[in-house]
Amino acid sequence: MNMVKKLFISIILLSAVSCGLPDVTGITLELNQPYITKVIPGQNKLVVEFEAQNNEPSFSGYNIYFGDSTNPRKYRLYNQQKARPTMTELRSTTVKKYSFTIEKGSYYSTNNSTIDTLKETDLPNGIPIYVWVSAYQITPQLESYYYYDNFVKMGTPRPEAVNQTIYPNNSLNLDGRDLAILISNNGTLYFQNAANGSMMAMAGSSLDDIVVPPENGYGSIDLEVKANRLYLIKITEGNNSYYGKIYVRSVSGTSAVVDYCRQTAANILSY
Image: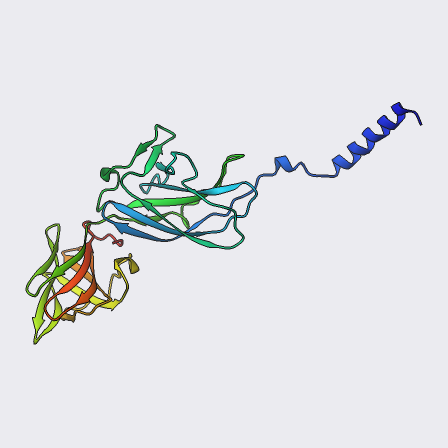
């Protein structure tokens, strides 16, 4: 068999084999969508906790977005190198937990505009913020599909006071509103409700343990002050409810060391 015939047969065989195989360069992968488990409000900031698992060949990390209810992707966040993804991550076959803080100084852009840094005015206390997290690959550029109903979560920044020592007959006041009053009865410390207030108590390890206030279950009685306990507060004014909380770090016979915060906006179930 001469060389021309051999070359012709080889081309035919190669074409036949190729026709039976998919073109892998044309396959679009769907990246696994991260799931936000908690949005923890802070003072002019939010901490976003989420779970995710991505093992796609070109997976690069996770992007964080936030905005208002009509445009949760208004702000696109960047990493410290002013690049995306917001959080660089390696491929994994197991579900992992992640945390990211949206705060003053974070790099962002809006609608692919110039990259700038967030200011406190971008994260105002008392204004709901909506957050979405995506999985991302750089080459070729691909992002997990955007879903609003199950994957966009809301959090509302609020003022707080941390590691404060308080004494009997002092009120816990934040931005002009009393949350509770510390009193002493026969050497035991109690929280007494402020005007229009009611409280409940439960075990905890920080202010962040509970970030969505219960709407019911509050009472009017004084509650004994104990360490490692959260005191949840509801203040009712007409048709409006304002929520706050106190975390007790430690207690002595004459004082308590506490963290506390309150939501400045009425009827917001985020604090």
